[in-house]
Image (tube, rainbow over all chains, first blue to last red; front, side, top):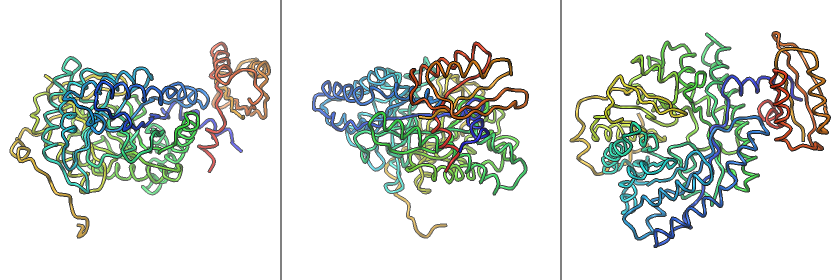
Length: 452
Length: 89
């Protein structure tokens, strides 16, 4: 039987500790929309998405009301568009992005992900056309998110794609110059991208997935932070146990919402993504959890160890609470979207090199980091290569979402508003990586024995 | 279907009467009530059965919320499954 204390603790988590479901994402396969006529393909895409996701937003809102738990985003992910557009006889892929944007607007969702290409081993003609269209596609759409997978543990790193993506990120920033290069916030470069990620900007519906599926991403940095405040000064065993218990509760709620959404939308349940996804709101920060463990400021020595423990405990707690866990699952460290990270970056404690180290043990990568507008494309490519190497060698997903805001310098801030927050521009190393990136080719896949 | 009604705010005359009257009007049966004053604030938790309710869950929720804002209280109704999921294995 439920007791009053448990009921009130749930209400306190929702009211004061920002407990929410971060996203319900419907994955939709668009493989059936392939057509030699690009116009016809776009019509099929629009028709299929709006038919499948017609009730997504309304259903999300009803669940929100009945269970009293906020569901912040309702989103759609689709088959990587290069696979669908590749069947059409056209050089211009931007209309496919426009079709996605229109469909997302009709459905009322916050974002649609899947303007994507998977090029870890090589690029098809369609992949290259899609990648080259990304700057214009992101400048002419509002809700479309794009991602490119440039490496994997099995295939190695496609350095031609890495070089190209450095230029594409710069071009995207330029194409969306009026909004401080906001287009780059909707573009992620992955290594070991997952096929069932519900979070943006990297969500796409993998080819190994079903016709349609419901994936749910939970959140809850505020809840974990609050729980840790009760165990001040105690050993790490206690800290880990506390995080696990909290993650279990948060994930159980996610599982319940996922099952309910799946039933009401007559769509199979895919996964719950156990992520600690922060927001710029006070009390919803991953950085503040690390500081609660005893670090003066996030980014100082000890941060990587603290994050490693947090990331692992979140997974251990969550995995028992859900019938199927997937996506990225772990702690996110998007700088602009985390109030504590923003403060640490402003104070100069959190720098790009430390963030790179942190990505070795967190769930994704260098996320939402503003760099100077005049950063060379080759430097951005080299940052991508470093991050992809970490993912490739450690068999984990890594990603890069950099914001080279045109005209901005170290010390400036980019204001994006809403969940995207604000990003202090961080310095990059001025020494050139141009000759390194100019080599191109492929970094071979690593071996997985003789480990040291 | 069971749901949990929670009422939190400053204590005053007539809170229970007003909430119970609204529930009765909508044919919602009260299964259990527990009420305390917690750090000066009035806290009431009710388990209710909304299976035979005349209003939809959404309308009931909106009516309770409106009553809450009239009385300066936070009143909400949530399906019981959310609490079961989070606190029971």
